[in-house]
Image (cartoon, rainbow, N blue to C red; front, side, top):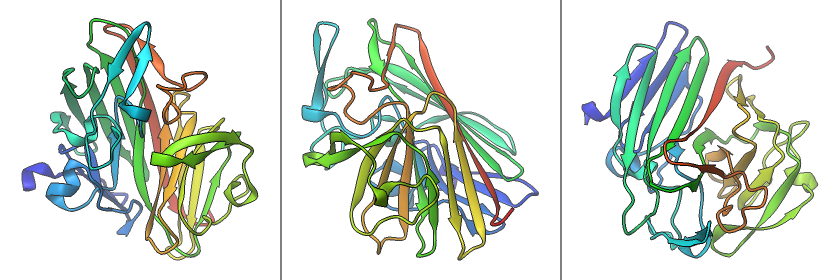
Length: 294
C-alpha cells in the first residue's frame, strides 16, 4: 500500500506520513519521537493501513441527534456511517481523497462528496498539510456545492500520546456534560478536574466532553520525552472536544472544532456556518514542537 502513504520530511527532524484514505495523517515524529499517537479508529485508513493519528472532520464533527435536523423550513435525514448508531464525523474521514499536489514540505488533498440517501451534504473539501522547521500546519476548507444553503462545520481529530506525567494547558469558558449516545448534555461551569488553564493532568476514567469559549490555544508537555507541543487555531475554531477512554490508554484526543457537537439540533450559538451555494468555510491549526523548558 505504498501508494497510499505520502511522506513529508525536512532537515529539522520533522517527518509526517499522510494517506489519501480518509485524508488521514498516519504518523508524525519530531527528532524521531512520536508527537501524534497512531490509534485504531473506524476510519478508512485504520481499516487498510492499521492506524490513524489525525483525520479531518467535514462537513461536521461528532454526532447529530436522531440522524436528522431541521433547517430553513426543511427536514434533512442522515444515515449511520459506522457501527455507531448516529452519523459520525461526516464523510471525509471515510472516503478516498485525491492528491492535488505534493512537494517535499507540503501537500494538498481534495475530496468531493455528492448528496445521497445517507446525507444531504453536497460539497468539496481541500486539506493542506505543511511542515516548516518544527511546525506542522493543517488547513481545511469546505465549499457548498448543493443548490441550497446548508449549515457546515469543520474540525480535526488528532490523537496525542498520553503519558503518566503529561500536562495539558487550555483555557475555555464552559464545558458540556455527556448524555446518552455520546451527545452533549447541559452547559456548565468547568469543574476543577477539567480546568486546564494553568496546566493539569487528564483526570482518570472516561472523558468525552465539549468545551466552548476556547481561545484557540493549547499546549501539551511530556516530561517523559522532554518535548512540548503548542497548538494555535485560527478564529474559525472556538470549540474543542476532549476525549480519552481511560487512564490506561496511551492516547487522548483534543479536537479543534468550528462548532459544538450536535449543533444541527441546538443551533443557537453552536458555531455552524450557513454556506450558500458556492460559499466556502475554512480554518487552520498550527502545531509547534519544541524541547520542554524552551
